[in-house]
Image (tube, rainbow, N blue to C red):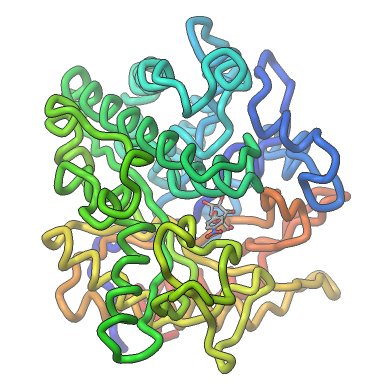
Length: 460
Ligand code: PNW
């Protein structure tokens, strides 16, 4: 049986808006997701995060469930508006207390906290007063918020993730408008992304300058699918490479190489902002690990203008800008998100990152799948999810055996939750949540995951 390295980090992940509830409790301010989900038609069946999994009240039970699984690490996010109701200046001590208690509970259970500072729930006041990620003020506001978190939690939290998936914020929030703040544009995504990267860099610099005594690590999490050339033609190979550059290198190149990919500059012209020399210097090297959220794979072909697959959800950027036509293999199995299950794509993506960025330590901070789960006699037989994890974790094992420095894997998600625009219609959890009673039940995949952790192997 092949084993993972001894210190491999096995974890599960969640995010604040998706699980906490308590949207207006104990002084929490509204976020753009509270506002967005209140607009008719934006969320499937009008779902909101008002209650979600009520993790705000049930966190002790949740930590216990994690402990039962034997997970070594738990990735969660802090709701900025819970600790700073308007995003700046005023601190909400009750919000601080909630996260402080959660962190203590995790440490008591021997589970290492991995804390994401921003998983999309921007304080609404910052959207209204400062144009959210389109304005320049956000960079300093984010750094001040990060500073508060380092100051209050950094004695116990040693693993920080500044941003979750800036690509989603930019493309789905400011390009396609399907996520908060719901804007549609073909230039705003590039501006929002620019400020996201600068905010990340500023927070990391601040952490390193002022909190080195805390001896923690800090990085960013980007999401990327794999793009496989549809044919062996030079054109399709170039299209696949271009698609990956517009998806992942857009955010990773500034951090690992100091600037945007050349192909983006060429194709976008004035819509792509420039970094000053000082900004380049500030950004370079601002991730101690390469955080990666990976879910699926698509074929990429050169688009001569007749492409039929434009603007598919999750297309990796604004299609017209890339001249890439995306498609699926009809033999691939699809999850309930219509995302194809292609474990070898995961391995190829890890190898691409390894090569392009000089063998960074990679952490898969999310991987998982949605299926139509049913609770029957107190059990959920989600064999498809079990197979999914087995396949992807075996691909991870292979990557490690080929020398790729993959250090950890966080399953998305610890439990079923509010799946953004899909509301409660998509279940990604290892634990089933009954959204009427809020009762949690470990699924079959959770029991498998527990065995895999215990044996430190995917071959179980
Ligand atoms: C990620 N796409 O979102 C998020 O980090 C999670 O909050 C979310 O629940 C999970 O994946 C499942 O969706 C994504 O369109 C949303 O490519 C959309 C895309 C990718 C990731």
